[in-house]
Length: 161
Image (cartoon, rainbow, N blue to C red; front, top):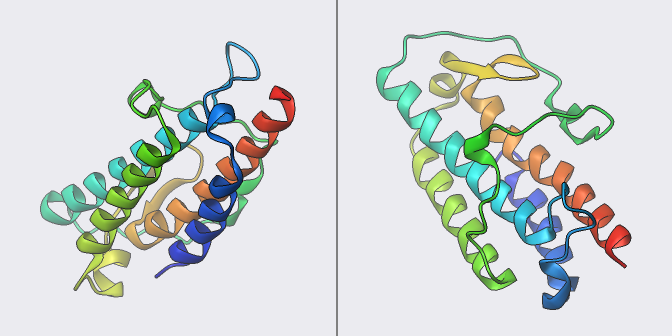
């Protein structure tokens, strides 16, 4: 489904290698720990699912051109997360973070069940960097966003050593 499971598998394989005692370490005061990054991914997917549901229920048909969302993984371009999507210390362990990510993925899968490609392509809402994206691209974006932050987690662990 839009590459989400393949990308999540890569993320989960990496998380399995992170020792619990390293998960909360921050390379500096203004950088996120691995746990905080996972919380951000949890918050982001939850936000996207909620927004997709809202747009389908209340939105007007509004198509959007296909965007190069695979560029999401390019970390040379910084994007500041909105306050609501910044970590607040929800997870105290990797197990809690994985459970949270599993719950948001279940919500994503549930929402998309019985939604046609046509429906997902007929509605859109804006992304801060890409502009208006249709709902299908928003779903695919979740996986690219996870890979972007997987690279961030690797950097955090290298700098925390």
